[in-house]
Image (cartoon, rainbow, N blue to C red; front, top):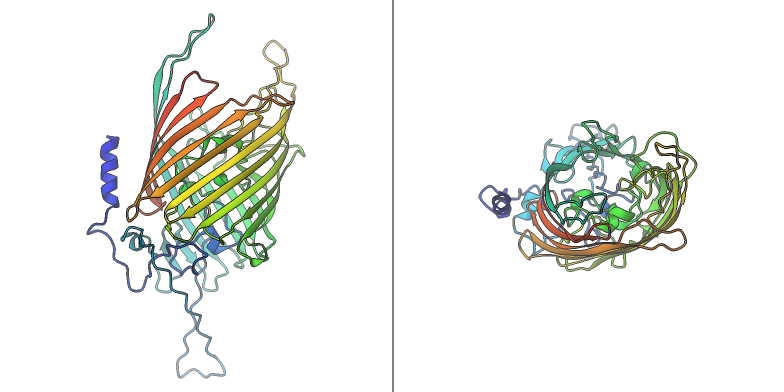
Length: 499
């Protein structure tokens, strides 16, 4: 059944009589990076090309320029002086010769109103703006339908407990189903973003009851000053690069094992940042303070906060670095080198974010965290890699078991993590092949560790029907863990659509 689905969808990606032809009034979207040429009004926005404070998952919508008022010959010049005509937008660069010939037409904007204030933009959705541009709203949604097969080897038992049988689990689910609202209010320099989730997985359903809030993001960005942009609210902490990537623009079905273990995920707080220090087009920084409790825990908190600093260098200039895979296929190299440090004081989890569990003893965990990452793109080839380090200590709680005895304290998950993945888009086709290797290693050190040794290795095949906005992904990972005897095999098939 999966093979038939795959074959049918691959056929859909090929040009056919249903393909739209570019309208003479709608130029094709840009295929190069934002640093190669100014983006045309019809180009899907990127974080590098929109605002220094664009949100992590997707850029804030660009506000259409207000058309100049027309003045008839009978209007007195003294009462209605003609407004200067707006400067003509720079023409969009030609699509890469290595891209499928039908891609530009498929990704073109689709105006709804004659004045262009209401339009449909692939990846951005329905966009509405006021005449003055002081207010705007973009609405869109995306869904990931995912099928997962996981083979688990049999586990040896003990004298007291029999071992687990070898088995294969199958899951078919909405891995993610989200809705985004974004735009600006009162001025183009006050932007907002709201992300809501409807996926049972992300809502933490147990016995039919959700245990997490549907609010993923709700924050404001004040970008009046390029080098001192303020972001405040709940959003993804800008710690490691792969976590900052747009969730709908990943190369594999999901992020790496190392990212899932060491990332900070979302939190409530604020940061100062610049996506283009001094206008050089090559430097960025982030300095933030956050609640330190993540989004999976609500209620009273202590003053144990999280502190963050991150710095990035882009030696070849700005580009949309928050998309994995080199769909622009530009011959100009693009690179990002980043490093970050974070300290979490009295985290209520054993590690931070969705992946962290609340310790059974009811205590807290303080950790030092550091990461370095690299992203590189050229001519359809992409490379992403990162290294993580964490060292922390447990602050015991006062929880007791059913007999009244204190629950033993489990050490922090101290250790290192790493991954590297690469992909290549086959010229003039929507097909991409990719590989990944990564894992984590526990390091006991002074405070001990509860982090198991883990490894993942595998590959992916992607079919891009409309870049990341409509794609089919099939990946295979062989998983090793010191907590499990033998290797596990995981196959995932995912169809993603952005509306």
